[in-house]
Length: 267
View (cartoon, rainbow, N blue to C red):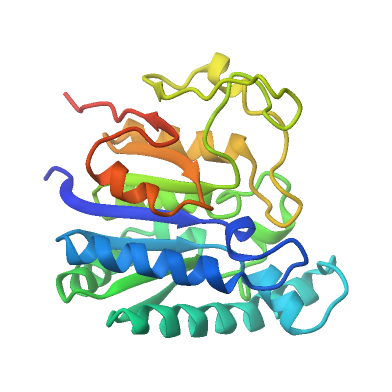
């Protein structure tokens, strides 16, 4: 069975959902909910993969900085996930949309029975016009939080796994920059945005640079890894700026916005 042409996965990171002082960016939540609701009204099935639980939870718990111990990170994730879903429920509700929460661990994807159950759940929700909101289950899974080489990398890889699982036609990763550049735009003002990449190889990875923003845990490398997985399964992947969610309107039209990694067709 091929990809669902009207199915799209959108991943939003911590840096988009929080402001410079670590508070929830309510305008970002609202604009994202508005655009995704509108896209669903155009006939698309939308899945949102959202980070930000630990950052939002840390703020809710009035911690002066991001926690370093495992127990406090997981506590922050538990508090933050509740806050994030409350905000999504409020803002999507303003646009007459119903959301559902799905929390995943790595083993949920690896075990065939759980994988099949997940697929059925996604399909049932989407068929009913409900927007699934997906996150890593950080409050019970320590692997993602403590490892340096995180499997899901601030949910970048998770979004690709979800896109493959749900046979989405497009994966859009909302980042804190416009896409992949030929050099780091934060260090080189004359850096050029790369509009289209047909193959992700060592040369492309060499452009990734270091970690992402101080509020998020994913950098460009994890986004490239996600794009590599998705495109290998035929899914077009776009990295674009989360400060401009309206770019999604251009993306569904097939127009340029950010960097497009073209999905490889299966033979």
